[in-house]
Length: 147
Ligand SMILES: CC(C)(COP(=O)(O)OP(=O)(O)OC[C@H]1O[C@@H](n2cnc3c(N)ncnc32)[C@H](O)[C@@H]1OP(=O)(O)O)[C@@H](O)C(=O)NCCC(=O)NCCS
Image 1 (cartoon, helix red, strand yellow):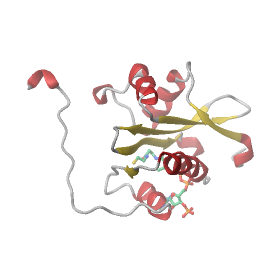
Image 2: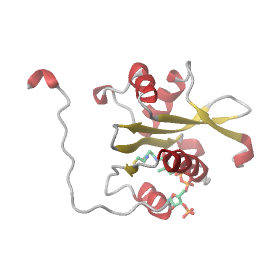
Image 3: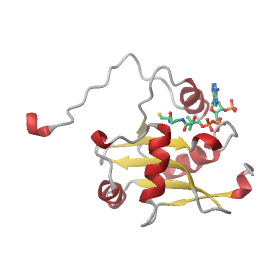
């Protein structure tokens, strides 16, 4: 059931959003205050980014996402996750490999943010070649009405 042959990795297409949201809720990758919605996903692709979807062939279920957004200078890789019941089977590795192929083709530096306690993700990213950037903290303004 969890062999990679039972899954495909493909680009996002219209209609994926409900399945994506299900995955992001289950993995705590998407919360309403983060402002990620269908429109933003599609615009980010138009701007040169990419949303890779891992789908179980038999059920059509979305079990993995990897979202790469491009700001003209760097690529940010985020919302990388595997649906919990499919975790721990090595499925994140082919999804990350496909993401790296996209990144290599784009030819821009790539950045990720990962919680320092998220050892699963840290191990995965380090093995794939990501290097720790240093003791930076991350800041954000979520509500521009307050500016
Ligand atoms: C991070 C995540 C994508 C990894 O997927 P996974 O299915 O759990 O992990 P896999 O079975 O594919 O293992 C891939 C690698 O992750 C690391 N890893 C997995 N489980 C681990 C654990 N319990 N402890 C430490 N490292 C672990 C290992 O490096 C492993 O490779 P290896 O087996 O060759 O050593 C997945 O756990 C997930 O979706 N987590 C919730 C969302 C999230 O935190 N995303 C990252 C945001 S930055």
